[in-house]
Amino acid sequence: MRTALAVINQRIWTVWAPPLAFPTRQNRRLRQALRTLETFLHQQIATRRQQGEPPADLVTWLATRRPEATGEAMPTPQVRDEVLTLWVAGHTTMAAALVWTWLLLDQHPAVADRVQKEGRQARWEALGTAPDLRALPYTRLVIAEALRLYPPTWVTARTPVRAVELGGYTLPAGAVLLLSPYTMHRHPAFWEAPERYEPERFQRERALGRPRYAYFPFGGGPRLCVGRGWALQALPVIVALMARTYRLRLVPGSPIWPVPALTLRPSRALWCTVERQTPPQEAGI
Ligand code: HEM
Image (cartoon, rainbow, N blue to C red; front, side, top):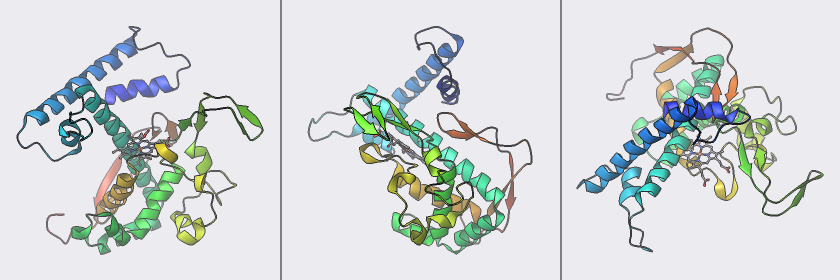
């Protein structure tokens, strides 16, 4: 996965990338990586179909479910593609969201203190379902603001089905329009001091009146991110759970800036020291 993503990240900014069939060094690396992923996924699917009691996870569900309409299990290549899509779309974005959140918390110690306090007050054993997130209101604002400044999916695309006038331009049917959450999330028409990190701007009173699509880290409409609900539940839980006990401190080094690769990544690895702040009170956490 790492090799495939590294090659794809390079291809994104190449003016002309040779088609995958061309035996360039990079293409060979990518094809080899895709073969490795394919073999791995085929094994996973086959094992789950053969096991009497496969693990209760999404791969099992996709591999073994027989929709009533057809009565047939999904063909293996389709299961493989579904799993690979969820894997890439789910893990690169979540990793980016978390890395930017930790960086911002390191740069804003007062915010990190509040997240820590909230994490310590929450009852962790109860944090299994979406309504329990009410216990983490501030952490949720912190995540929302990180996704504003550094939306992991910094660009998404739409194609008009027929010609349309927009802002004085005629867009032909079939054109590819790139919509950038990164640009929109920092647009001064919609955001006060857009470059400032300020989680409170997502408080209900302050968000009122803001156009809906001034903020779209998960896209929108029928192609809205299918993992949105899951991400918005998992991110605050992960952040608060870690912040209650640990403080990540960035090792000083060269400047960091956002690099628009497949997802928005930091320009270099973020080495951190992990400081344990209090021993956890509850056993097992
Ligand atoms: C912080 C985390 C995430 C961000 C910022 C994010 C962002 C996005 C965006 C912007 C899109 C395109 C939507 C559009 O064009 O309207 C998208 C699509 C998608 N996302 Fe996410 N995503 C995240 C997490 C996840 C997770 C955890 C999963 C899976 C478990 C996931 C699976 C997908 C899939 C499968 C699509 C394609 C949906 C479709 O075209 O119908 N994403 N995501």
